[in-house]
Length: 122
Image 1 (tube, rainbow, N blue to C red):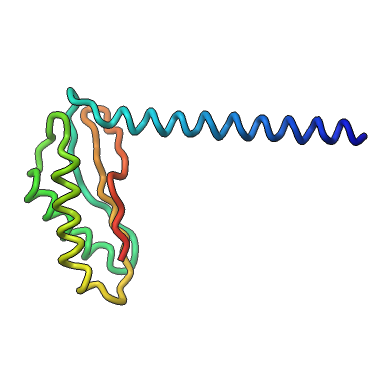
Image 2 (image 1 turned 30 degrees about the vertical axis):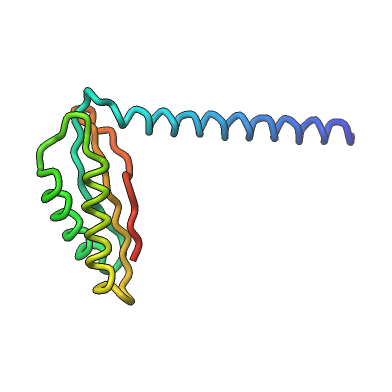
């Protein structure tokens, strides 16, 4: 009985480990696929929290000022992150005691695949 129990536990562990490793690989591939120099990307923001919409609007403005509204060949992650970091630093004092989470989204065209480029929490 003890051998059967040990064998069952071993099978469960092996299954769990293989699932974990395959999930990591899928995530790795997704991130790698989002940096294609020959693809077009656009950027945006979405939010959660009581004051999320207010913060989201300011991040959208920062993104548009940094890279415009059009899709960009190869993307412009560094410019977008730099603009959003500056936006966060500027509005953070105004959000003392308020709740908001803003997600900066990178979207590939034309397939619509997207990922969170960065997350800001107030």
